[in-house]
Amino acid sequence: MKKDCLNMNIIKLIEKNIPYDPDLLNTWEGGNYSMLNKHIPPHVATFLIDKAKKRKIANQESRLFSEAIALNYFIRSVKNNVIWYSSFKWLSSSKWVKCEVRKEIEKKFCQDIHEYLKSGEKIDVEFMQSKVRSLKEKDGGKLLGKTKSGKVKNPTAPDIWFISKDNQLVFVEAKRDEGSVRYLV
Image 1 (tube, rainbow, N blue to C red):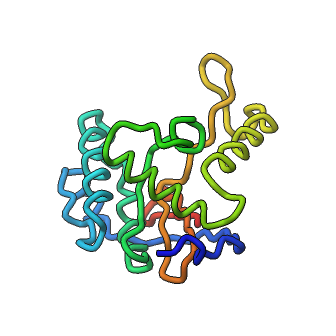
Image 2 (image 1 turned 60 degrees about the vertical axis):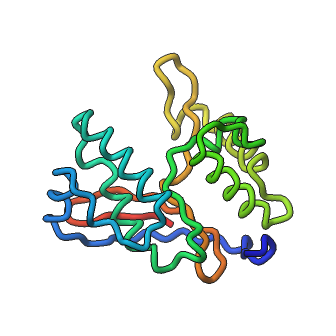
């Protein structure tokens, strides 16, 4: 994909619900992750399943279920498998500006986030981080909250991001409600 073909000029904020069968949640909590759509790229499915297994050990069985539902919902809109579920702190950690990361999955993520954010002349990881720092300073902990030591928490990136078939950079935050997954795009 050419870097200059993304449309970074349109910002939309959409909130919707995705209903799900309660049996899917029970299956997920039981450690069966076969509900993930076969079209979800392996780097995303493996990362999500590995993280879900770790959460299961920590007695957080339903964690990441909402992300799985959202991934299944959006996968048909994704262009060229450019989709990520990510818990990486790329909006606040300096190692993401120059891709000073160690793990292969982090390197691939970093390459993609740099490639697709740079499609706008002024938007890149460094620019996004400067905006996050500004937000953090202005917020003072009112919305972001504070750590136990009293520092303002860093904002985190949404759960999922992808390039849509109509060349939009889409960020998705997913939360489970009773009987549905609420997502914000």
